[in-house]
Amino acid sequence: MEKTFTTLGDQRTQERKDAIRNGLLADPEKPTTLANAITIVGTCQDMCADYERVQRIVQFMVDDCEKTQHTIKHDARVPFEERMVKRYRRPAAGYEEQLPSDIRPPVVLQKTLDYLMDALVGGPEPLEKVHKFVWDRTRAIRNDFSIQQVTKVDELRIAISCFERIARFHILSLHQLSASSDAIDFDAYQEREQLNNTLLSLIYYYDDSRHKLVSPNEPEFRAYCIIFEIQDQRPDLEDRAQNWPASILKDRRVQTALKLDH
Image (cartoon, rainbow, N blue to C red; front, side, top):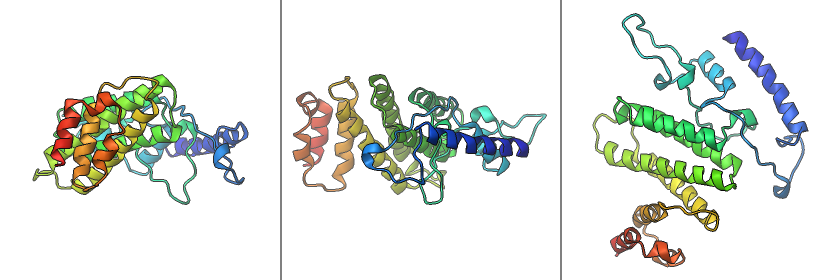
């Protein structure tokens, strides 16, 4: 595995040079303007890129959710690459920009979220046990969408669906884990923070795709935004809502949420 890690690292260096030369990645040695910024298009077809999978195995950074299960014959749990999901990586000084092969395109992000929600959140383990893992991996999904700045109708539809499901995950987590004695590592403040970030991105997608597609769940999530902002005591909440499309503003869920603010 160490040899594979070294080989992938060498390939990665060459891939970066090729991507910069072909205009797929910005050259960190050359100044650029916002108008000339390059939008990366992801090419990773797996839930986690080859390099990250091998890197985390070598560095013993594989989560329990990514390991084989205990069996009668095998007591020790070992990394199971097919279950490995890309971790969230906070942008920071000293980190090289991600390569196209690190980033998953929308279809793969949708497949990854399907796995997280169906196999883990909807799986046999309690939410308390898988929450931290899913929390981090859904954050990485949102980040991959953000980096690629999707604009095509089909990709916008996928992004909206994914962000809606992620928002529901955070709402469910707040409801079930805030008062759970088994959720030792649960932080309601951080959960609210990620829910807020998810809803803000979702609202952006709704607004950006207004004349491109219909989002049937938009009134539901606009209502969540209202309820979420009530605690922030923002005085312009109702005024901003008046700028929403009439069909959304008149929706019973939105109207009920607005009444809660009085």
